[in-house]
Image 1 (cartoon, one colour):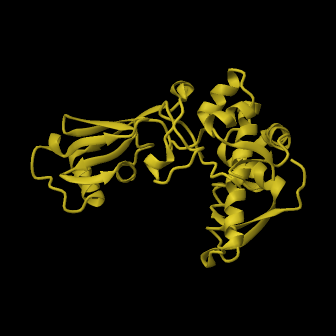
Image 2 (cartoon, one colour):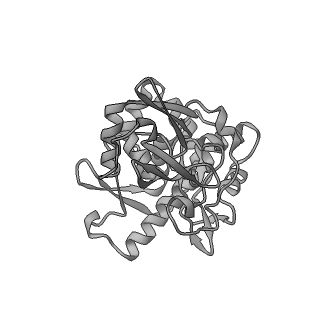
Image 3 (cartoon, one colour):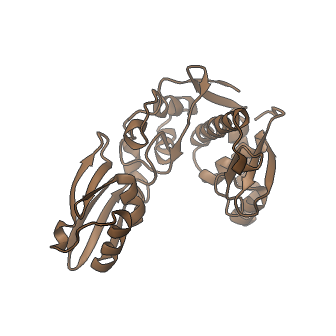
Length: 287
């Protein structure tokens, strides 16, 4: 990525200091925070464009209308743990003796996309991404509300082959009761435990939109958080005094699936094809 002369201002949530990072270095660190440097080159390129677009949009919005809680920063990130942006120090710690090799691989992929971003209607898009889809991505309107022409449901069948695509969470009856009451205060859990979790309304892509817990309706996102699930695409059963959740995917499921991008790259797709698939109705250009 060429040096644009621009930089990001990041509020470190750990130290509360504002750190300034030049664009090229930031994109390297943000991709390192999201994907393995050994991922397919085209998947890394797609992630680089998504990161630059996503954080570039936050920067634009913040500088037009500053948020006083950010102390002059464009956004906040946990720099100590490399979430959002992995500093060189964090990368060296994570990669150890393979730092030089990994840094070369990552930089080669990231620098090759040279400041490219995605736009819709002339504006930077909200280029959201996550680890693994449930097999189909979600419409943003079904998850967060608000329709965006580029955050619409698309098939992502390659995710089913990803490690961690399906996971389980087991909760005892007592723990389940505790979690339900935290998510839905006033829930009626006096009866048969098999009736505690009622009917669920699902999105067209398969995630739980709302579910009844002890007679109280909560969103799929609230249930996911309450029960510690990897995604909102889940089913639950009760047996032997335990509740078992079967969960598909990992993340909010809106926008680009990193596992899906990796699968497409392995199948021969380039980064432009990956981006146009997960972010339809967008144009690729320079910032």
